[in-house]
Length: 279
Image (cartoon, rainbow, N blue to C red; front, side, top):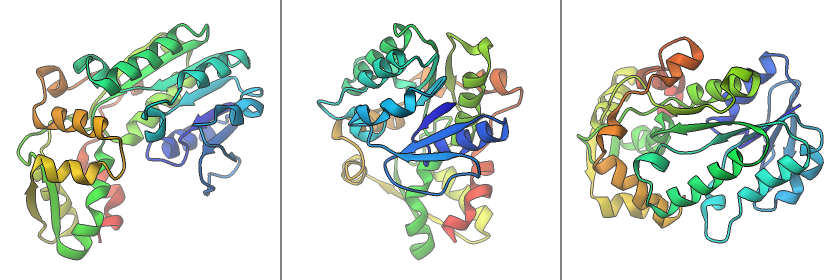
């Protein structure tokens, strides 16, 4: 059985589906009760209290670990989950990390994430680490403004990065959970192109068939919005990257292609699948 944490999110959903379609027994873990694919067991657990995972991990052969915002907060101990998995006899872990661990290694949240990576490497389990950049699904933050005012508001409108489709992350995670060839793999995951927020707005407009105006936020305005959902330090780290990406953060990674045998999905692909949210 494979345990998927964050199973109801933008990565967990396609990962859970891919594992179920591969014939695997899957336990989907999330904080809230939600619908899951047929044949998948759902368990409600708050990862801030990892002992709630003990009976689940006792039955598991593999774990996908996605750290929610709470597990980046001061005092959180996500490495305890890894230790618990190893003690429970789990044989493999796939950890969702961040590109910033290598591109911005001195940021507070990046230092903490590196420690979690080290815990996975030193756990005695087989492991793989995924390091995505920005997510295409961050565009969900614009759905209400597009629906009600035909506006996309974002900072750094003409600075782009190669954002990745979460469905690609989920499929890479599934491959790493199922295939021994990925043991010890560290995969940087990006989309196939650098795209700016203004170009994302244009892509959404084209899919809608109606105009969408772009409004450039200041960094301060963007941070005020972001800290409603993530710690302030993580917001600052993110704004540093999207406001002034380094050459390594602009690089198109080959790893999605190498793992899945196909090119990564474009932002236009993501919009086409999710356009109903913007109508």
